[in-house]
Length: 254
Image 1 (tube, one colour):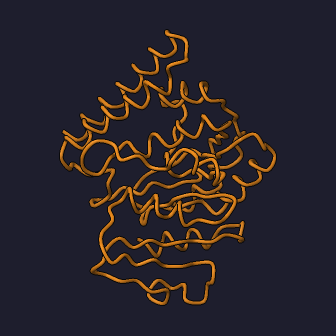
Image 2 (cartoon, rainbow, N blue to C red; image 1 turned 90 degrees about the horizontal axis):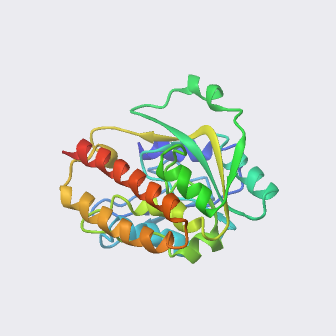
Image 3 (spheres, rainbow, N blue to C red; image 1 turned 180 degrees about the vertical axis):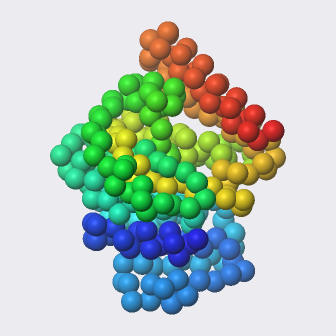
Protein backbone atom coordinates (compact mmCIF):
# COMPACT_ATOMS: atom_id res chain seq x y z
CA UNK A 1 0.00 0.00 0.00
CA UNK A 2 2.88 2.37 0.77
CA UNK A 3 4.28 1.84 -2.74
CA UNK A 4 0.85 2.61 -4.23
CA UNK A 5 0.72 5.79 -2.17
CA UNK A 6 4.20 6.81 -3.37
CA UNK A 7 3.23 6.12 -6.98
CA UNK A 8 0.17 8.36 -6.64
CA UNK A 9 2.51 11.18 -5.65
CA UNK A 10 4.96 10.42 -8.45
CA UNK A 11 2.05 10.53 -10.92
CA UNK A 12 1.26 14.17 -10.15
CA UNK A 13 0.90 16.49 -13.14
CA UNK A 14 2.80 19.09 -11.09
CA UNK A 15 6.31 17.66 -10.83
CA UNK A 16 8.32 20.12 -8.71
CA UNK A 17 7.98 18.77 -5.17
CA UNK A 18 9.92 17.10 -2.36
CA UNK A 19 8.77 14.15 -0.25
CA UNK A 20 9.93 13.17 3.23
CA UNK A 21 8.92 9.61 4.15
CA UNK A 22 8.95 9.10 7.91
CA UNK A 23 9.10 5.46 8.99
CA UNK A 24 8.02 5.20 12.63
CA UNK A 25 8.71 1.48 12.93
CA UNK A 26 12.27 1.06 14.30
CA UNK A 27 12.11 -2.70 13.69
CA UNK A 28 11.69 -2.40 9.93
CA UNK A 29 14.00 -0.09 8.00
CA UNK A 30 13.16 1.21 4.54
CA UNK A 31 15.52 2.27 1.78
CA UNK A 32 14.75 3.97 -1.52
CA UNK A 33 15.49 0.86 -3.56
CA UNK A 34 12.97 -1.26 -1.65
CA UNK A 35 10.30 1.37 -2.35
CA UNK A 36 11.19 1.74 -6.04
CA UNK A 37 12.40 5.34 -5.75
CA UNK A 38 16.18 4.89 -5.81
CA UNK A 39 16.47 7.06 -8.95
CA UNK A 40 14.11 9.79 -7.76
CA UNK A 41 15.97 12.60 -5.97
CA UNK A 42 12.72 14.21 -4.83
CA UNK A 43 12.27 11.52 -2.17
CA UNK A 44 14.06 11.13 1.17
CA UNK A 45 13.51 8.55 3.90
CA UNK A 46 13.79 9.05 7.66
CA UNK A 47 13.98 5.77 9.63
CA UNK A 48 13.25 6.41 13.31
CA UNK A 49 15.43 4.69 15.92
CA UNK A 50 12.50 4.77 18.36
CA UNK A 51 8.75 4.87 17.84
CA UNK A 52 7.75 8.54 18.14
CA UNK A 53 4.03 7.94 17.69
CA UNK A 54 1.78 9.45 15.05
CA UNK A 55 1.44 13.01 16.39
CA UNK A 56 5.16 13.60 16.99
CA UNK A 57 6.00 12.08 13.61
CA UNK A 58 3.55 14.32 11.75
CA UNK A 59 4.85 17.42 13.52
CA UNK A 60 8.44 16.38 12.80
CA UNK A 61 7.66 16.30 9.08
CA UNK A 62 6.24 19.81 9.28
CA UNK A 63 9.30 20.99 11.20
CA UNK A 64 11.70 19.53 8.64
CA UNK A 65 9.84 20.84 5.59
CA UNK A 66 11.39 23.59 3.47
CA UNK A 67 9.07 24.28 0.53
CA UNK A 68 6.55 27.13 0.23
CA UNK A 69 3.61 24.69 0.35
CA UNK A 70 3.13 21.59 2.46
CA UNK A 71 0.83 18.60 2.97
CA UNK A 72 0.75 15.30 4.83
CA UNK A 73 -0.26 11.91 3.41
CA UNK A 74 -0.68 8.61 5.26
CA UNK A 75 0.96 5.45 3.99
CA UNK A 76 -2.20 3.87 2.58
CA UNK A 77 -4.12 6.78 1.01
CA UNK A 78 -3.87 8.15 -2.53
CA UNK A 79 -4.12 11.48 -4.33
CA UNK A 80 -5.47 12.22 -7.80
CA UNK A 81 -2.85 13.18 -10.43
CA UNK A 82 -4.30 16.71 -10.59
CA UNK A 83 -4.27 17.34 -6.83
CA UNK A 84 -1.07 19.41 -6.61
CA UNK A 85 -1.75 21.23 -9.89
CA UNK A 86 -5.31 22.28 -9.02
CA UNK A 87 -4.33 23.30 -5.50
CA UNK A 88 -1.35 25.44 -6.48
CA UNK A 89 -3.20 27.08 -9.37
CA UNK A 90 -6.01 28.08 -7.01
CA UNK A 91 -3.63 29.29 -4.28
CA UNK A 92 -1.62 31.36 -6.76
CA UNK A 93 -4.83 33.09 -7.87
CA UNK A 94 -5.94 33.70 -4.27
CA UNK A 95 -3.00 35.12 -2.35
CA UNK A 96 -5.12 35.75 0.77
CA UNK A 97 -5.88 32.03 1.05
CA UNK A 98 -3.75 29.83 3.26
CA UNK A 99 -4.99 26.35 2.31
CA UNK A 100 -6.65 24.36 -0.45
CA UNK A 101 -8.82 21.33 0.26
CA UNK A 102 -10.74 18.98 -1.96
CA UNK A 103 -13.52 16.52 -1.36
CA UNK A 104 -12.60 12.84 -1.17
CA UNK A 105 -13.79 9.36 -2.00
CA UNK A 106 -13.32 6.26 0.09
CA UNK A 107 -13.14 2.50 -0.30
CA UNK A 108 -10.68 -0.39 -0.36
CA UNK A 109 -9.41 0.30 -3.90
CA UNK A 110 -9.18 3.41 -6.06
CA UNK A 111 -11.15 3.11 -9.30
CA UNK A 112 -9.36 4.80 -12.22
CA UNK A 113 -12.66 5.10 -14.10
CA UNK A 114 -13.80 7.64 -11.49
CA UNK A 115 -10.92 10.02 -12.19
CA UNK A 116 -12.62 12.08 -14.90
CA UNK A 117 -16.02 12.00 -13.17
CA UNK A 118 -14.67 13.88 -10.16
CA UNK A 119 -13.35 16.87 -12.11
CA UNK A 120 -14.75 20.23 -13.18
CA UNK A 121 -16.12 21.62 -9.91
CA UNK A 122 -15.88 25.30 -8.94
CA UNK A 123 -13.46 26.23 -6.15
CA UNK A 124 -15.26 27.95 -3.23
CA UNK A 125 -13.60 30.49 -0.90
CA UNK A 126 -14.40 30.40 2.83
CA UNK A 127 -13.48 32.86 5.53
CA UNK A 128 -12.94 31.74 9.14
CA UNK A 129 -16.53 31.49 10.38
CA UNK A 130 -18.22 30.51 7.10
CA UNK A 131 -15.80 27.62 6.84
CA UNK A 132 -16.43 26.47 10.41
CA UNK A 133 -20.21 26.55 9.87
CA UNK A 134 -20.02 24.50 6.68
CA UNK A 135 -17.40 22.11 8.06
CA UNK A 136 -19.23 21.37 11.31
CA UNK A 137 -22.42 20.48 9.44
CA UNK A 138 -20.33 18.31 7.09
CA UNK A 139 -21.61 20.12 4.04
CA UNK A 140 -17.91 20.62 3.35
CA UNK A 141 -16.35 17.17 3.55
CA UNK A 142 -12.57 16.92 3.67
CA UNK A 143 -9.68 15.15 5.41
CA UNK A 144 -8.15 17.65 7.84
CA UNK A 145 -4.47 16.91 7.24
CA UNK A 146 -4.82 16.48 3.45
CA UNK A 147 -4.90 20.13 2.46
CA UNK A 148 -2.22 21.97 0.56
CA UNK A 149 -1.06 24.59 3.05
CA UNK A 150 1.12 27.64 2.91
CA UNK A 151 3.86 26.28 5.12
CA UNK A 152 4.32 29.37 7.27
CA UNK A 153 0.56 29.45 7.97
CA UNK A 154 0.32 25.81 9.04
CA UNK A 155 3.44 26.21 11.18
CA UNK A 156 1.78 29.18 12.90
CA UNK A 157 -1.04 26.88 14.08
CA UNK A 158 1.43 24.58 15.82
CA UNK A 159 0.51 21.60 13.65
CA UNK A 160 -1.09 18.58 15.29
CA UNK A 161 -2.30 18.82 18.87
CA UNK A 162 -2.26 15.74 21.09
CA UNK A 163 -5.92 15.40 22.03
CA UNK A 164 -7.08 13.06 24.78
CA UNK A 165 -5.57 9.64 25.37
CA UNK A 166 -4.31 7.17 22.81
CA UNK A 167 -4.07 7.94 19.11
CA UNK A 168 -5.89 11.34 19.18
CA UNK A 169 -8.49 10.66 16.46
CA UNK A 170 -9.71 14.29 16.17
CA UNK A 171 -6.35 16.02 15.97
CA UNK A 172 -6.59 16.11 12.17
CA UNK A 173 -10.17 17.46 12.41
CA UNK A 174 -8.77 20.55 14.17
CA UNK A 175 -6.18 21.32 11.50
CA UNK A 176 -8.47 23.16 9.01
CA UNK A 177 -10.27 24.99 11.83
CA UNK A 178 -7.06 26.37 13.29
CA UNK A 179 -5.59 27.35 9.93
CA UNK A 180 -8.79 29.17 8.95
CA UNK A 181 -7.77 31.80 11.54
CA UNK A 182 -4.71 32.53 9.38
CA UNK A 183 -6.66 33.34 6.18
CA UNK A 184 -9.21 32.07 3.69
CA UNK A 185 -9.65 28.40 2.81
CA UNK A 186 -10.26 27.22 -0.74
CA UNK A 187 -12.41 24.13 -1.29
CA UNK A 188 -13.08 22.06 -4.39
CA UNK A 189 -15.80 19.42 -4.67
CA UNK A 190 -13.50 17.51 -7.03
CA UNK A 191 -12.62 14.24 -5.30
CA UNK A 192 -8.85 14.60 -5.46
CA UNK A 193 -8.13 12.54 -2.33
CA UNK A 194 -8.81 8.84 -1.81
CA UNK A 195 -9.17 7.67 1.79
CA UNK A 196 -8.48 3.97 1.70
CA UNK A 197 -10.55 1.82 4.06
CA UNK A 198 -9.35 -1.67 4.86
CA UNK A 199 -9.27 -4.01 7.83
CA UNK A 200 -6.18 -2.45 9.39
CA UNK A 201 -6.90 1.22 8.61
CA UNK A 202 -7.41 3.70 11.43
CA UNK A 203 -10.82 4.66 10.03
CA UNK A 204 -11.95 1.06 10.58
CA UNK A 205 -10.38 0.84 14.01
CA UNK A 206 -12.34 -0.05 17.12
CA UNK A 207 -9.48 0.78 19.46
CA UNK A 208 -10.35 1.87 22.98
CA UNK A 209 -13.40 4.09 23.16
CA UNK A 210 -11.57 6.38 25.59
CA UNK A 211 -9.36 7.59 22.75
CA UNK A 212 -12.46 8.92 21.02
CA UNK A 213 -14.31 10.37 24.00
CA UNK A 214 -11.24 12.01 25.58
CA UNK A 215 -10.23 13.51 22.22
CA UNK A 216 -13.76 14.83 21.76
CA UNK A 217 -13.59 16.56 25.13
CA UNK A 218 -10.26 18.22 24.34
CA UNK A 219 -11.55 19.17 20.88
CA UNK A 220 -14.54 20.96 22.41
CA UNK A 221 -12.23 22.85 24.78
CA UNK A 222 -10.19 24.18 21.85
CA UNK A 223 -13.33 24.92 19.82
CA UNK A 224 -14.86 26.87 22.73
CA UNK A 225 -11.96 29.31 22.73
CA UNK A 226 -11.73 29.47 18.94
CA UNK A 227 -15.42 30.34 18.47
CA UNK A 228 -15.75 32.72 21.44
CA UNK A 229 -16.35 35.81 19.27
CA UNK A 230 -19.04 34.23 17.10
CA UNK A 231 -22.74 35.17 17.41
CA UNK A 232 -24.45 32.98 20.01
CA UNK A 233 -26.97 31.24 17.72
CA UNK A 234 -24.34 30.45 15.10
CA UNK A 235 -22.00 29.16 17.78
CA UNK A 236 -24.68 26.94 19.35
CA UNK A 237 -25.48 25.38 15.96
CA UNK A 238 -21.82 24.61 15.34
CA UNK A 239 -21.56 22.81 18.70
CA UNK A 240 -24.74 20.83 17.99
CA UNK A 241 -23.34 19.83 14.62
CA UNK A 242 -20.07 18.62 16.15
CA UNK A 243 -21.96 16.66 18.83
CA UNK A 244 -23.89 14.95 16.01
CA UNK A 245 -20.58 14.25 14.23
CA UNK A 246 -19.11 12.76 17.42
CA UNK A 247 -22.22 10.72 18.17
CA UNK A 248 -22.09 9.09 14.75
CA UNK A 249 -18.41 8.29 15.16
CA UNK A 250 -18.96 6.87 18.64
CA UNK A 251 -21.80 4.66 17.38
CA UNK A 252 -19.52 3.33 14.68
CA UNK A 253 -16.84 2.50 17.24
CA UNK A 254 -19.27 0.74 19.56
